[in-house]
Image 1 (cartoon, helix red, strand yellow):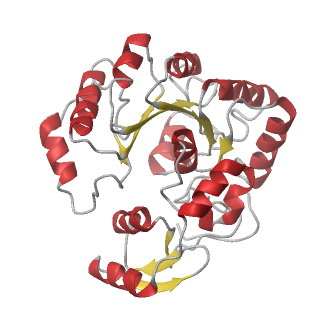
Image 2 (cartoon, helix red, strand yellow):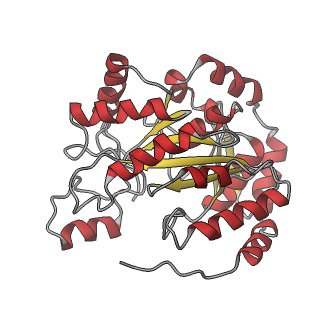
Length: 327
């Protein structure tokens, strides 16, 4: 097993963040230690807590997302409850996949952590991050019942599919595992019929917290604020949202001024294509500057070369009507 190695100390990391050209205090959502490690591993956890302390000391009110599938104990919860300014959300990833070759971390660890962190939640919020859900792996009726049972131990539940990218496909092939999909698109794969089955099961068995298709929707609902990604413009996303949350998002959502957006895009090195009732469409901008615009304006910002198909909810085309996205 690889041992996590710190690349930079926490003080320097915070300085880099606060001075980054795309960071905005009180606006930009922050995710910590979610790329190459798990933030709650014993060697990593002290560094996570120090980062949270430093961000809180700066009196930032940004959303801070901590995504984990590892152990969380009551002492950890006491630390997580000690921050006064940041809007902290603990997202506990739980797939329920039983095959150890695919999911080497026992899902019961995450399930136990979810119960613990929710039971002790005070100043932070908890999201049941039900992912990835993959046909043939963890979508049986029993799997769905178990996943829905865990919704009772979170302020919100976000369900989503699999990023079947190159490194994951390589892992499947190297270990002789059957590949769940023939293609590896750039977006998460979540077939339409699978979503329908989950929502049907939710109606049948009930939920303890609302289900959301998008992470930011679940996070902001848990904190009682409008979605910072402006998903309200993609109105079909909202058909499963609580009425109170729809109202919050509707009140905050405002079509931006075209001249302002045109100048914003130009300063970032891109070009405004159009503003429609769903999103701002731009060209020449990759994800970081698009997110800067999106978070600052509270309005979706899409790349003209990678269109979002209505009702696909920003997912890959696999398992949806016959359209083809660029890989």
